[in-house]
Image 1: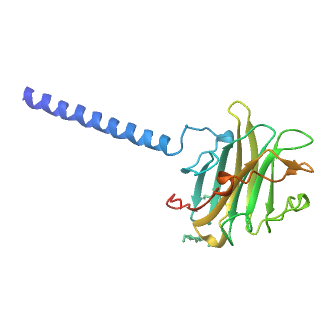
Image 2: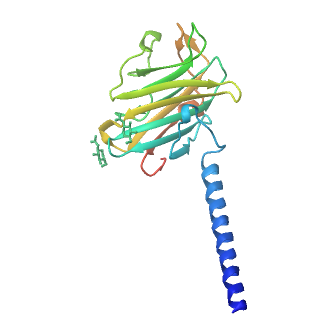
Image 3: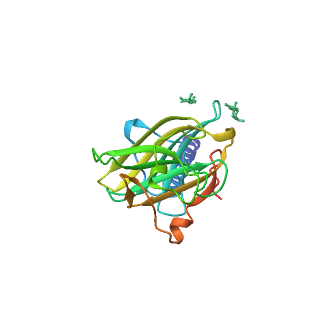
Length: 206
Ligand SMILES: *[C@@H]1O[C@H](CO)[C@@H](O)[C@H](O)[C@H]1NC(C)=O
Ligand SMILES: *[C@@H]1O[C@H](CO)[C@@H](O)[C@H](O)[C@H]1NC(C)=O
């Protein structure tokens, strides 16, 4: 009897050990899929994330199938006097048609602010960059800058256009402004390649 009990407890220990190993492996996969572990203000948390292929940006999100909405946190490195942008383009792939969230330091207060604007042409003028409604509903938006690690975060809750889980997304960053609003960006390879189709249901990036 004693030897059987020992065997049983041995099996138990082995099982616990294997479960812990499996758990640790999954934890490290969750971390490595989006780089460093990040915490968000206001107790926000997200079920999914993807490292975007350019500009060191990461997108965190939760998709709610019941009402076709998406909560996102777009996080990207930038100096305190620069800007970052994240957009969904419901009608095309790149800048033209991009329904954008732009985060930058407010000229008057210096604290991070966010506006939404539609980019309708490549020949944007500074007056085109104004706070306006997007072609889909925006339920919440907020921006913050973390000076400690030099990141902007854009928080947004939106209706997914057409209730489609796969959307064309575009993102951008620069340190140039005109009339107090973000204006212009570098035209190098990375700044012209920062677009991807993203399936918010599966996390597949293409
Ligand atoms: C959509 O559903 C989610 C999950 O139930 C909820 O948290 C969120 O507030 C809803 N959004 C809107 C705009 O109703
Ligand atoms: C969006 O699509 C989901 C999944 O197909 C569906 O359950 C939901 O009812 C749709 N929501 C709206 C607002 O059309």
